[in-house]
Image (cartoon, one colour):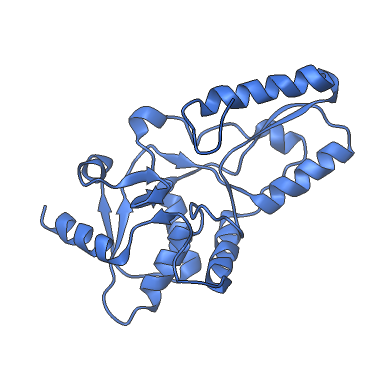
Length: 219
C-alpha cells in the first residue's frame, strides 16, 4: 500500500489498486483509466505551469533574462488536459464503458512542448540549452519539485515515458484539446492566483537560474 509521501513502490501500488477494483466490481463493470501527465488550470505541481509562466516572465522583463532549457533529444511528453480527462471519464461512466484505457495527450517532443510554451507566452528572447549530463552534474532535478526543470526526465531511465499510444482513448471518445490551449489557460491561472509570484512546486529560483546560466556560458 502506498502511504502519503512514499513513492518507493508507486507502480506496484497502482497495479494493486487496479486489481482491487476488478476484484470488487468485476471486469465487465470496471473502467481502468491509466492517465498520463495531467495538467492544465489548477496544476499545483507546476509541471505544466512553470514553463509558460517562466517564458512569460522573461518576455515581460525590461532586462535581458535568458531562460535555461533542457536539450534532450528523444524525450517526448504527452500531457492530458484535466478538463478533457474529467469530461471523458464522466461520460464513460455514464455510458457504462469498461476496460483498460491509456488516457494520454498528443505526443510531442519536449523541444516542441517548450516552443509551444514560448509561443503562448509571447517569448522571443534568449534560451540557453543544456544537455541532461550537464544538468545532472549541476544538481538540477528532473520532472518537478525544488530546483528542477519540469518535464525533463533522463532518457536512459525513462525511454518511452511520453510515447504511449492514445489510440484506445481516441477510439473511446477522448478528444484532447490543442496543447497551446492548455498552456495558455494554465498560464492565465498561474497569473491569477493569489500569493507570491511563481508556480507551485517546481522550477528554479531566479538567482539559482542566473548562476546556472552563467555556468553554462562558461563551458
